[in-house]
Length: 75
Image (cartoon, rainbow, N blue to C red; front, side, top):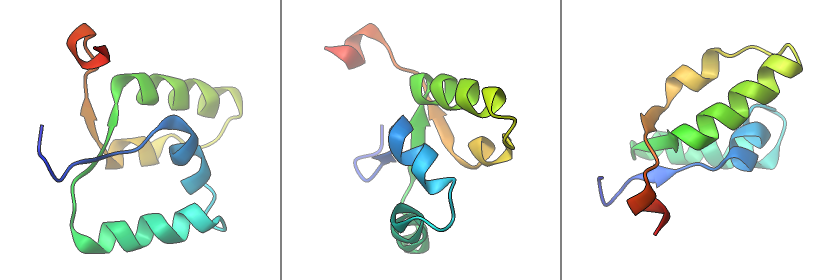
């Protein structure tokens, strides 16, 4: 993994889906720096599940690089 990689957790990802939130503004600032922003497979699953239950659009999940989460990562 890249040392300058930013991994976004599920709660942050849900928060930034609301473009009126404070975290959306912070996310835009981070995006403007060109840093690599990604999500883990766990975050992808949790967010996808929540979006599907609420009938919200799923497209923004494709904006992030996806990293698998292994047993070694957990340790």
